[in-house]
Image (cartoon, rainbow, N blue to C red; front, side, top):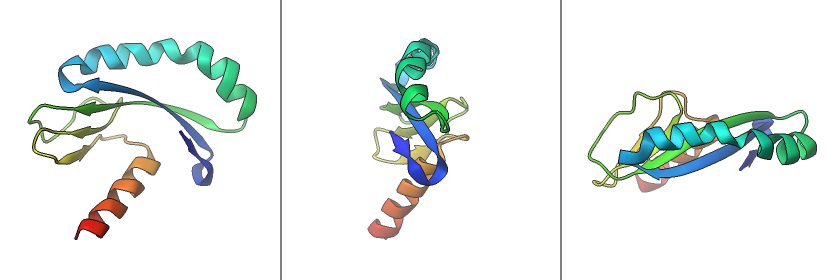
Length: 98
């Protein structure tokens, strides 16, 4: 995912909530992809790695690497360091639904 307004590329690993730690570990394996592709085509962009989750009934996230969680109740829970693109998108969705 590319956020042109923030000069960021965002690599995302999606996981079920119970496998969140595995997703965080898998982010560490993105080095070759970033070097071969992202830094080659977007050399001036910051690379942000994040995990998106689904499932569970949690309503807060404590791991910094988690972008957001869509819980079993349909609630979107933003991570504490969610990429700005995610925060803006969710804010727009909430504005639309309200």
